[in-house]
Structures are given as structure tokens and as C-alpha cells.
Length: 280
Length: 323
Image (tube, rainbow over all chains, first blue to last red):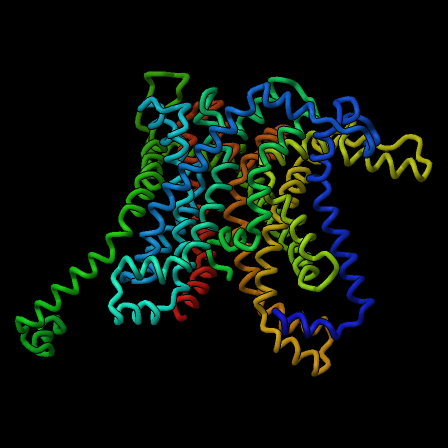
């Protein structure tokens, strides 16, 4: 990075600030809807619906309070449950699999990797009908655990790919050296693999949680009142209550907040996870 | 045949020690595979079996509104799928939506990645703000675009137009109904906004993996910025561009949230893509057989595209296996 940066210092100053200006202009253009969402959520309904838009109207937090009163808490808890439990299950399945695939590669390991990847190519919608019928048959409609099982399966292939790419970074020579020194499996896992795997596990968990938290199609078709998740609640809330723009924006801010915070905290891990571990 | 007969002559007769070694090796191989099995079995049961079931359902006449009329249909549902104008329209919409979202967001993403690869004041903050659209919950983003941006009366888009028009003394600024006058563009724009940061992050990773000494050498040799980009950066980025197209397509082709929320597939069927059309066949028309057949057609189409796409990933994987 430092040599990279050094090579850039030779560029003329004026050119650099011109690019910086353009970069910031585009950044603000892209960020504007998010900023607008946040600003509108702090306005009263009357101030939110003015034309031209008002930037200076007084702030209020009343919509956030109203939302929690109108039951946004329950679907947020459902979303959190589906996201957290399915992420834990994914890790329990994915870590051993990735270990088998990367540190002690099984024969034809690329075939197994491709099988996992291929399940991501299959559009979810094409499997929805039998899933719906089976879930209905066993009486598990409108149940958070149904979503947990489905989200686990949905995220498992991605997690295996991510974890494989992280664990592949453990140099084989180091493991062999530890084996020669007489280290057992447990101490190899804890002392050699662990330190390299922990950031990978964190990144994988983050990606799986984001995908589950944001998932809509399965949730909207398989849940109703009791188990509805945040996105389902959001859509139903707008339909049932009519449009209150400021309250809608407050709801959009609230449901996006966990992912926004997590994503900002781990931006570089995000892309690697989304691209199935392929980008270093 | 000759090979089979020749084999014992090539190999020396098995001794007890060799047999033991072979058995140990087989046991070792099995042991290596055990940690893989839970994940494999779980994925097969939950994601693959439903597709087999979809295949079976696609051969049935089955409409929930006409109970007791479930019967074997053979390939009749596929006939309906291929001759149905609605479905052809949905296929077309899916292609238009996916291609335009992926290409436009990739191009803007490339521009942003190139800009963010430069050093400038507040670069880290700019990057953080830029990825926000990608992190906002897709359903929330769709609602935001529909109501807070596109709304003809008080949406931000018309609001800005009116404000700017006001500065220039326009007394009757336009009140454009974005969603009904240009529904596909409205959906595409919101998705481009959402996916551009993703493309930008992949391409930025590509740019930053470019060896600095090569760029430095080019600079010393007096190559212009454009020539460096054209002959060094672009070839290096090729793999990353392919990857972003591939992944973007996988994710965008399945778009459901935005269509469901912003346009409900309308007006008419102007923005009905395949996932939304299948959803409607299933949960609005209750034509289970037809929906299943359409699902199978989608899977086959995706497999054809994915086979080409997989070559991209396999080149990445080969590189990793070489390491």
C-alpha cells in the first residue's frame, strides 16, 4: 500500500483535487436517498410532505416511538432470531466442511465446491412451491423455525466458499511443521488454524446475518402474523396504515440500522463474502 | 479390454504390507470426507429435493381453486409456458431488467472504483457513504424509492426539479409521475442505485491488487493515464469485471422485492419479471402445475447461462488451487 501511495504523489495537485471533487460529488449523489430517508424520518408528517422539500424543518423522534408502539419490535425480534440462529447453524455446518476442503483437501474438492456454488445459481422461486406445500403439510407455516432452516440452507454454500478461502490461507507447511513437532489435532486447530480463521468466521457470520435479515420472498410467502419478519412487516404496515411518509422513513431507518452498522464496520470483508471468497 | 488384462502384469503382486497401506489410505480418505457430509446432506435435502419435487409438480394439472381435478398432464404445462404471452413477456422483462441493471451499475461502479483508487481528502468516509445504498434493506430501499423519491406530489425527485425550476423562474414546474410514465426505468434506477456499490467494491479490490511497481514503471516510461488504463489496468481488471457481471447477474435475475414493492409488476405487465410472474401464478392464480413448469424453465435457462459463467469462476478457482 505504501509504495502504491507513493507512486501517486508524483501526480499534479490540481488533477488530484479535481478527481477528489468528482468522487465526492458522485458519493453525495449516491448517498442522498439514504440521507433523505434519515432526515425525513426526523420531520413531522406535515413537514415531510412539502414541495419543494424542506431541509430545515424542526426535528422530532416521535415516529420512532410510534413504530415501536405499533408493533415493529416483534418482527424485529423474529428477524434477529432467524438471522442469529441460522447463522450459528451455518457455522456449525460450514466450518468442518471448509476444513475438509481446504486444509486436508479431499479428492475432487473443486467438484464439491462447484456443487455448493451451483445451488446458488438455482433461482429460489423455482423451489418455493414444493417448499410451501411441504411446510404447509407439516403445519410449520408462520413459524420462525421454518425460516431458520431455509436460511441455513440458503447461506450454507456461501459460507462454505468463504470459509474455504479463509482457511486456504493457512500455509500447509506450518501445519506439517506443527505435526512434526508433535502437536495434536486440537492444538493445531487452536494455535495454528484458529488465529487465521477467526476473522473469517466473523466475516462469514456477518454476510449470513445480512442475507437472512434482508430476505423477503420466503418470509412473505411462508409467514403471516406471528412469525413475520421486519421486511414483511414493513410492506404490510404501509399497505394497512396508508402512507405516512415520515413514519415510513423512520421504519426504513430502524430495519436497516443493524445491517448498516455491521456493514460499515466490516466493509472490506463484505465484498469478499458476497463474491463467494473469490476476491482477495 | 487389453488394458484390463495387462494390469496385473504391470503391478507387482500385492503383498500384505501394501494391502494394509492401501486400506489405511482408504480409511484416511473416508475420515477426511466425514466433516463435509453434514453440510452436503443438509444442502441437498433442503435445496435440491424441492427442485425434484418441482419437476414432478410440473407434470400435473393442479389448480387449487378446482379441488379434486388433480391429474397427470404430461408436458402440457410446458406447452402452456412456452405459448403463454405473459410468460414470454416476463422472460423479456427479466432479460431487460438484469442486463441493464448489471451493465449500468458495473459501469458506474468502475468509474467510482477508479476515483476511489486515487488519494483524495476524506476517501475513507466517501467509501463508507458509498456502500450505504447496498446495506439498506432491499424492501426498505424499494419503499423509499417509491414513496420518498418517485412520488409525483412531494417526492424528492420532483421536489428538486421544482426547486431548481424555481431558481430559474419557472412558475409551472413539471409534476412527473415517474413510476407510471417510465415503470421499467424506475425499477432499474432503484436497483442500479442498490447494486453499484457492490460492483464498486469488487472492482476496487481488483484495482488495489494491481502491483504498484508495474504502474510506477509505466509512469516512468511516460505512458499517459489513458494508455496505462487501457493496456495495464483494464486487462488486469478483466477477471474482476467478469466476476462482477457473473455475481451481479445471479443476484439481479432473482429480483423480487423491488418489483413486488415498487410496481407490483405493472402497469399491466410492464415490469413483471419471471420471479414475480411465477409468484403470481402460484399465489394469485393458484395454478400450481403451470408455476412449477415455469420454475423448471427458469432453472434450465439459468443453468445454461451459469455454465458459461462458471468458466469465469473456475479460472479463479484454478488459480487458487495452484497456490
